[in-house]
Image (cartoon, rainbow, N blue to C red; front, side, top):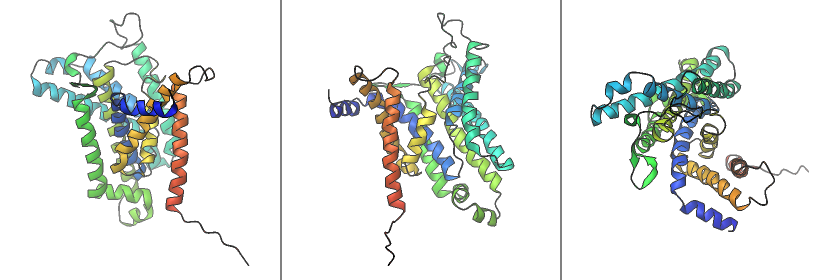
Length: 329
């Protein structure tokens, strides 16, 4: 099978693209909100994991499920909404730590966010191997499965999609667009990212806007993590940082960047990145006898994304800047 045939097979096998497309678009939207306000949210991976942790806690270790279970469609839907919102709340708390440090101590958020990704991995692994270790896991280190009542609804014929996840994606993109384009809060976030001096001159507190930006970005990522656990994983695995999140929190940074920080282009950008990811796995199978040991499918995907990013960066420089050749006499 040739390179082009592999790419064609990737595109027509759309069912495998749906799940990464949904989550890359959702997290990419969250990161874009942060980028608008100069909150460089490279910690979405940790917020995503904490959203999963929050969803598991409410469904397995709180009285919420027994309280709502068997109460009909409305109560079951309310249960899922509460769990998802709680996951979003943990995402907010996780993003506010670097947000507070940036707003009040002037500490750059990027290294703090990156470190907190590994703290989130460690918290999840500690809980999975310790107090939350499952009793019905057949010797594996992982949690028990969440109850059926808390699981999201599979769309018939599209097993990789869930009704609630699709609705959540539409709401997230619509919310982000209205927030940034139609509200005063969105205008303040944009001013923070482009002209903080003008923001202060207008009488607004830069620290409050920074915290608002961090909270909104973290909330959407936490919601995505909760939806992932309720709709796909149903449990927390051990060594969650070993690729078991799909690294969506990192990969979605490219989605936000490719979209020109415009939420209207998030879905096409997420589709491009999802195709590159799936294409990398197919290329590994095609070149398995030619690749040196240690080159994984994810590494191939990263190479493809890197090339895309370089081409995009060159295009953006040519679009945003004009160059002239001046010859002095």
